[in-house]
Image (cartoon, rainbow, N blue to C red; front, side, top):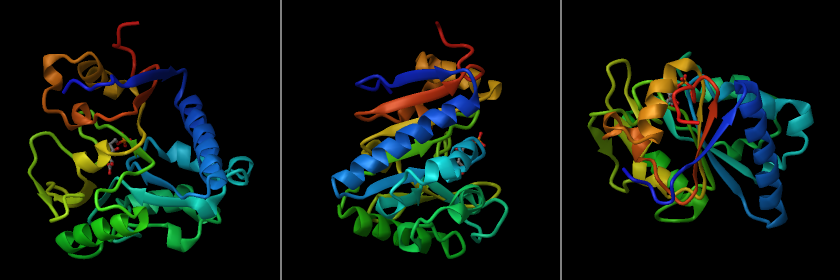
Amino acid sequence: MNCNPAPKIQVFPSPQELAQAVATDWIQSARQAEQAQRQFSVALAGGSTPRLLYQLLARPKNSRQIPWSWVHLFWGDERCVPPDHAASNYRMTWEAMLKFTPLPQKNIHRIAGEIDPPQASQAYAQEIQKVLGEDRPSFDWVLLGMGADGHTASLFPGQTLLPEPLGICAVAERPDQKRITLTLDTINRAKRISFLVTGAAKADRVHDILEKTGASKKLPAAEVCGANVEWLLDREAAARLRQ
Ligand code: 6PG
């Protein structure tokens, strides 16, 4: 898909420097929301890449700068497992950040991976609408990872989704376990979308998508377009991009 405007690309020397840059943005954005007396809604990425960011945000030197009571956390996707399961994105976020921060419980909008997937998808969509106060909700910030196959959130190449009636999220049928994911429409309505992609394993796919080779056709990560999309890469993931 040809995105207009084209996504911004930023390359960092290391995953640590990438995470610190995002943490600094997070602090600034949350404080701007507080000053404007409005909530700051973020849909978090799952997987392993963002763990570094979450650990940084939990560090006292960063956490004490964040007006957590104005922050509302959601997830871009979740595996259909209980919240204490090793595969749970919520558990990863709890271990890396949530248990160290004063974020009010009511500001944590977890996907109920432990219940019937269609019910979880419907309930999550209704919670997003209620908290964001919009029928067609627009997150302030959506953080995304990307798999080496070009998937993002739980939007996988060639898969069929079972969207709940509101079209805000969907059940993704996967061989390992079902997942609940934001739909592409919901992601693309966000005010800001940041891909955090690191490691050599992603370099080929990053090249396909950001240089729009034929191989990027129909890759979910290539379909993410919006007013403000950025790809934050480390040197390894950016290795095949034209300088
Ligand atoms: C998930 C994520 C998924 C992830 C990519 C990249 O639930 O697994 O939402 O989209 O972002 O698979 O994962 P890594 O960061 O572990 O490479």
